[in-house]
Image (cartoon, rainbow, N blue to C red; front, side, top):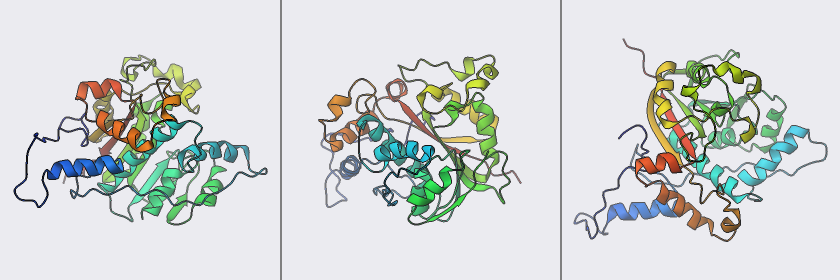
Length: 327
């Protein structure tokens, strides 16, 4: 499998009319595909099992007049991401697909109790979800005041809080994995950012990254590898939301970035198509479509030929591995 193919997008090899003589039921692989479509899953390659990614059971909170401004701002995203009170269904569905990719990339490689650092974790929804699955999570963000908002929502699991610049903090030991979700597109030097993230991972550990796909056919932003002097963007880095995007990394830039950071690329998953996630003025259509149908369309587009996926899918999730030191 090439690096720009996902496990989910690999050819399934189902032949029309094929019948398994070894199974009580015909077309076992087709039944597995049906299960994936039903639960909007991607295959788990570690044990061959297919199971639904659990939804976080975080506490339901309600906005209060005396909350800090940063809490109120984060709450507007939580309404879409975890509480199901949609004003932008495209955003909410895209977030749900991203969440499933992130949890899959961790659970395929790490057993519960592994230590995970969530960098720039904001309102902590991934931190909480991973903690509820049994991981020992460290929440990190420059905005220290958000830590208490995360505590307010947390219902179970273990989360340590380490606000500040993750690359300047002194952690007691390297982590089993680091999560950098939707942050690398906001920095002027993504190569340095990935290298510093890799330094926080122990040998044999993982870095999981999500970011918009720079090869998406409507992306207007420059390619990082084509920029002769990224320092010109230093004054505008770290701004939030889409307005703060500087570079959108292309799939063909992933391996060179990984090589510079001392990482190996295990998987690149392209997901979130623009039709079912509101990117092509489809929000009014999404309001009329059942979410199950939207998820099925999303899954189907993940089985497009690799060149089509590269230019059509809006988001990218990558799992890097830090090699074991040679003896």
